[in-house]
Image 1 (cartoon, rainbow, N blue to C red):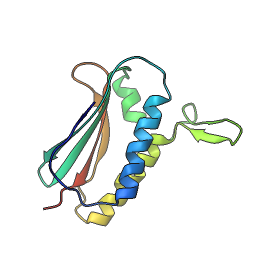
Image 2: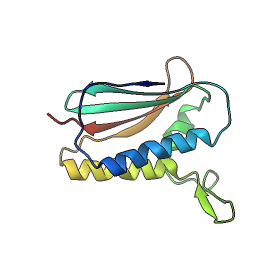
Image 3: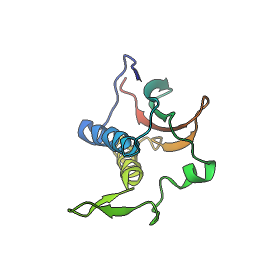
Image 4: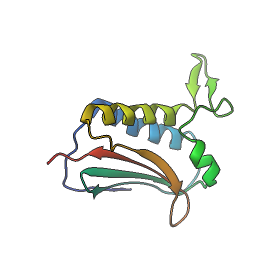
Length: 129
């Protein structure tokens, strides 16, 4: 499900769409029943996006490691040798690029256990005024 707000962000539309595609692709790589939510909220001068996968739980340690290289998680698959498990690294780099582009040094990406089960990956992008 999605929850939208009537706000705009400062950023690269193509990169932000790619970030969301990476989060969705990673979630859909695991075939489980349940809900996935995407929401946005105003957070001061930023818009905070929250991508929650209620189908899976991860320990805080696992969540802390999501945005760092992990050879156990990163595997080449398929005939083309596509690299899997790098989705969160791609997302982290996109947020870093936006942090530099906006010049505000406030763009962040992180993950934490969700209130009602599962886990949430959240990221902030500058809000257009």
